[in-house]
Structures are given as C-alpha cells and as structure tokens.
Length: 317
Image (cartoon, rainbow, N blue to C red; front, top):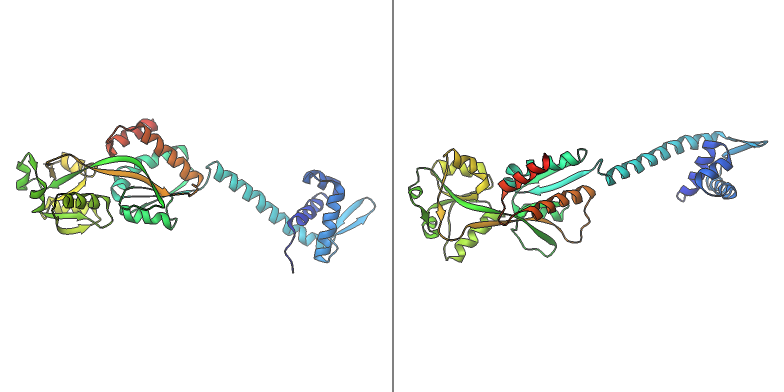
C-alpha cells in the first residue's frame, strides 16, 4: 500500500472539520473545485466513502468519522511541532552542549553560565569537563558543540579561536627549601619530583615543551587529572607542580601553598574556543559564541580567569 498523500489528507480534515467544501477551501487558500478533487482522490486511495450528501449539506460516514478523529490528533501534533520549532528558533527551549577543562569548569564557567542563563533561562545547559584533548575529541562525536580548552592538538577539522591566556606557575609546599629563593631555574625544577597533569592536558603539553626546549626532562612522580589532589600532594611535600595561577589563588593567599618565580618570561597557556569547521551551530550555541566573542573583544592582552570573571560580573549587573 502506498503512503498517505498528506495534501489530500489535510483537505479531507478541513472539509470534515467544517462540513463544508467552500469553508475548507477558504482555510486552505485554494479553490473549492481543487478541494473537491483532492477529497475524491483521497476517497479513491482509501477505497471508502467518507462523506454523504443530503441537499446542500454534507455529513461524515462512520468511516469518515473514524479517520477524522485520527486527523484531529495528527494536526494537533502538527501545531505543537510548529510551536516547538518556533520556541527553538527564539531560544525558548533547547540544549547548549559545552565542554571545558576542569580548571575552567570550576573557576570560570559558573560565572559565564550564570550570564547566559540570565539571558536565556529556558535553555538547558549540559557542561562536560575533561582534558583539553578529550574535549577536542568530543567535538567529533557531536557530544559538545563548543569547547573552551588549551590547544592540546592541531587538527585541520577544528577551528581554534583565541580566547584568553592563563599564567602557569610553579607551586610548592610553604616549607620547601626552594621557597627561600627569589627565582629558580628550570634546571633546579628538573631535579625535583613533579606532580604532573594527565596526558591530553594543555598544561602538561606546555610544561613538557618548555623542558624539551631547554634540553631537560621533567622528573614525573605522579600524574593525575585531579587539580585538588595535586594541591594536596604538593602541600604534603610529595613534590612540586605547575598549575594555572587562578586555580591556586586561594591557597596562596591562605599560605597553604607557595610559589616562586621561574627565571625567564612568564609561562602563558593559550586558551581557545574550539569548534568543528563548517559545522552549523544550533541557536543556543550561536548565542553562547556571541557572548564569548564579546568577551574576547573586551579583553586586554594576557587576560586570565580573574579578569574574565570581573567582566562577566559587570555584564550581570
């Protein structure tokens, strides 16, 4: 059996609803003879008589009544679908799928998400977190539409839009002997056991590249994705570590951890907004990208999490 012709079915529904061919034609914006012809074709398709006529009035047959009851449900769903489509276009419903690193998820994204939620309260937000590499790979499975990460890989299918720069610092136990020094060299750091971020981390990539550039190899004691665990191990003098400055500001202020300047220029971690090339954004992702672009334009060079939070707080007022 061939599929139902929905044009014919719609014409039948309008005639059955109005019990009048002319009224149905007016609602459908076509001529009355055209409606009559479409209904006749639909009856031929069904091999059933759907209407009876007496004088100038028409009536539904029992078969016609049965089909009409189903037609009412179908076209109610159609109106509901049209409403849903319009809601999604106007950002009255939908899902925003984001990915970021654990540091950004904890110290920055709550501020950014609150800003977005204030403007689009009916959009559901799904925040994924992991290493920069994992988040970039999540784009290929469409698990996330946008990710904010350090550039852990180069891939021609991914666009990386510069977003901010985070300073990487060395952290130590306050009682570590190196704390007494004003600056320390990379050679001195290489002799210390290092608690290192996991493979796939932008921080690890940056640190390893720095060591390799200077002909050195880091003495990795432990590797983990858990920033809080790293801080605990360092505080207990199991080793030293490199972390984004914003992730340890509280511990440094409370003197649970210490830091010493490294000889040479600051170590800066480039953070980017990453997304698939030639991929059409959902309305929710597009509006989120617009907010990120505004932040990018307003930033000063070397802006990090703290400055970004300040800017978002200004927006939220």
